[in-house]
Image (cartoon, rainbow, N blue to C red; front, side, top):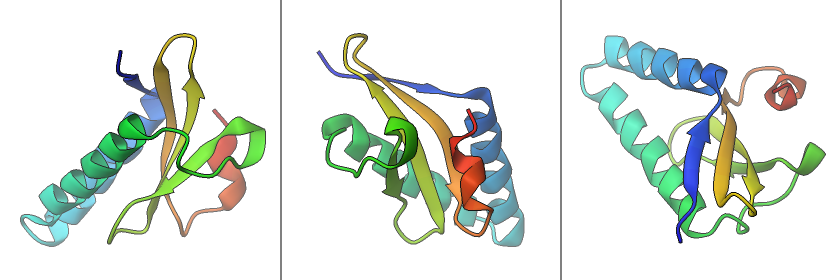
Length: 99
């Protein structure tokens, strides 16, 4: 049974805000950002243990091309991947674990 993906409401907000920011800068760039994030999420679903464990059992996966990390936890008993943040790497690092 595959894992289900659940996004924290703030992660959804980060995702949408970033998509819109890129799309406003250059039409189509937001879509490329979305494809990169979705591809990385699919990679996480396929191999959730592949990415390194960091603070508080969170794992981090770097998005290709764009300066973002997907910060997530695995709940194997529920077969769930909880995405806490879609985090821009220029932000203060301590903020990515506050969910």
